[in-house]
Amino acid sequence: MNLVRLARHQHPAPPYREIRMMDVFDSGSVHIGHVENLYVEEDSRRLRFVDVVTRGFMGLGRKHCLVPVEAFITDQAPGSITLEVDQRTLESESAPAFFNPQLVPDERLQQATREYYGYG
Image 1 (tube, helix red, strand yellow):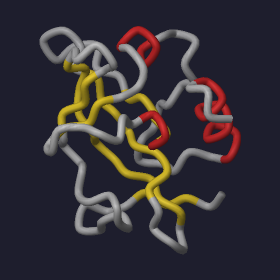
Image 2 (cartoon, helix red, strand yellow; image 1 turned 30 degrees about the horizontal axis):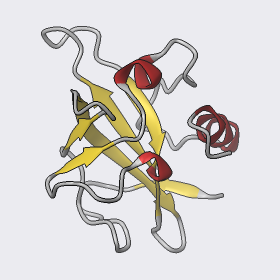
Image 3 (spheres, one colour; image 1 turned 60 degrees about the vertical axis):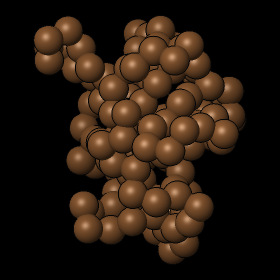
Image 4 (cartoon, one colour; image 1 turned 90 degrees about the vertical axis):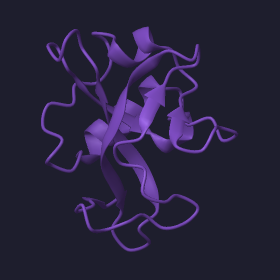
């Protein structure tokens, strides 16, 4: 699928709205970070992946994690996002590496990420 990274002034297609900078919680309600970037299908602007930046300790050790939107819990409180996975799964060394969030994830990374989270 052909993805693009949305610029700050661009928004995804409904049902999603501007979710950048929203807090992200894991399946155990632990605050793990915030949404930094949105990746959408080029033609439809349908949201497919988000870049979750983990908090790290005192700002050190922050990590960018690519997460498919299927991992979102749909019935959630407004103003935050809850994932169906725990923090260890998100930050695991076996998670697909996402080093440069300014670049759109290629097809191989998209597929590896979907498979890692169980949506492949």
